Amino acid sequence: MKINCVVFDLDGTLVSSHLTIYDTTVATMKKLGIRGDLPKEEFYSRLGHHFIDIFREFNIEIPDFEKFISIYKSLYFGFINTSSLYPGVTETLTRLKKNKVKTALLTTKGQDQAEKISAYFKIDKYLDYIMGRRDGIANKPSPEPLEIILNELGVQKSQSLMVGDTELDIQCGKNAGIWTCAVTFGYRKAKELINERPDFVIDNFEKIFNIVMENKG
Image 1 (cartoon, one colour):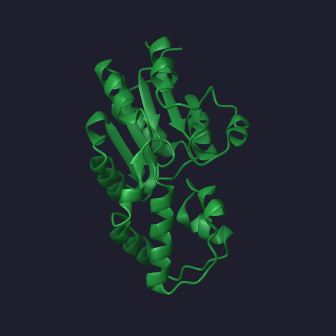
Image 2 (cartoon, rainbow, N blue to C red; image 1 turned 135 degrees about the vertical axis):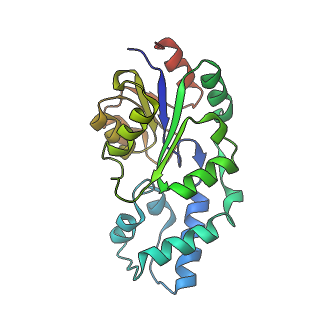
Image 3 (spheres, rainbow, N blue to C red; image 1 turned 90 degrees about the vertical axis):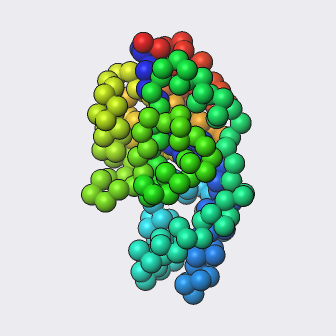
């Protein structure tokens, strides 16, 4: 095993953003006059899935989804102060870059939002590639966006690692045929993640560096 590339999920992996996402969602619903019950804890447990799927589970009808997303994006940074990087993120990304390990971001957030959030937290300078949701490209757990990243960076699947906090991240990595690492400090319980049989399970972001260095090509 040789790891020369690490692909990270965003929400729940690099950034603790559940409050921002929830408050922005509620504010968007209010602005559009959309009614529906959105219990916080249940909402948090579904983060990582596409909004369409989340609203379907809560039986909330969104008449114009594109309009919803447009307003959501316009309001998001008004609540960004409740988001923060997880401990050790900047330090670990810095150390990976110094050791010439390629890094990338793979998120279901739109491409523009992925880029803006990465820039806001000043982690974009450490990332070799940012892959947000794009028209015509499947979302996780499809391997398609992950395979695009690996092709763009010119790295082998056998030397790549997917890191995330949900079953979608682990399934995406497995579907693409690369190594997987689940983080237990995000939006899923450890038991749920272990059931997905990732290659690694960690409770501290900085442990990623140790995994990579012990298996670096």
